[in-house]
Image (cartoon, rainbow, N blue to C red; front, side, top):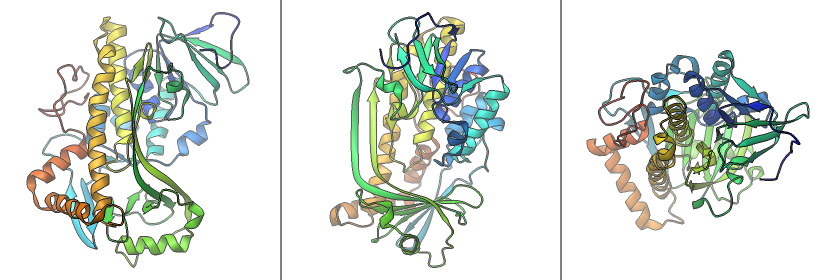
Length: 424
């Protein structure tokens, strides 16, 4: 690929893995590689301050907590308090508590905002001697189909640099350079637009005791903790809405109505944004020596909290596959990487889609109609009253919901429970 800075000589640097992106996926890959004794370099186009302060998802699911625990990293990288395992569904003002207790033993999900996880992963990686280069501009990937790809970039001081490597981990998100480096026609994109918009609001306001999802004829709303004194709110809105159509007074009025909480305490709003709920899967998740990890390969609707957790799952599988290849000359994990990742990706996409349609169709039926509303209400009623339905929901929420293939558990760490492994 010819784009990007060029070097007139062979690369002067060499490493085993170049990781593109210093978000949760890239940092997890790098930390797991360091734990495996494998050298790597992270390239990140943004500054450290911008990367570590981005406000995103707030729950590390049970499967991911056990994954970090199996690598001996849970204490170092997971901030926040253990979740009590309860979610509140508020339907027309009536509260229903649903648990994610699936009956398994071991560590549980953690309330850990993305910026906290990123900060701790960064500190752990650097303390272990890791090589992390911020403000790397004009990153380009070359010879991905060969035995030794080259990654070229411009360092923060303007110097053109190149790194030769055995593998590239593309962890730079939906709009990064990694997926764009794959030749046309290699990847297939499966996309779905839910036709739903959300206004997302970050405010210095008291967080809820537990995640709150509210359904009513006024539209969907949600309230999540983003720290001890910070809340993230979501309000269903037309996808074409603009943030400036939602002044503070309108936001707080809508939240009090939809959350059925007239006494909701407001606070200074520090961020507001409107986005469309969409899902996309790119397959395969590999091209030559490039492996796509996290949002570079798939985007999932926010409901269910699967986006960041899928990225952590990909990172775990990639790191194990590289470890086996480097140390044992076993490429089984590399060849199976895309298939194994996509199995969970589609599983979590289905769960997120189910939850998205249920919580939106059960409320305002302007677009879905009364028949779809009735079906969604029936699904909620089953969730609240059926032990088996609640157990299935809990397994999906924890991420310990299906039997992995035979190669899924390849150490380190114990199997999380009889039907799922920490490494799946």
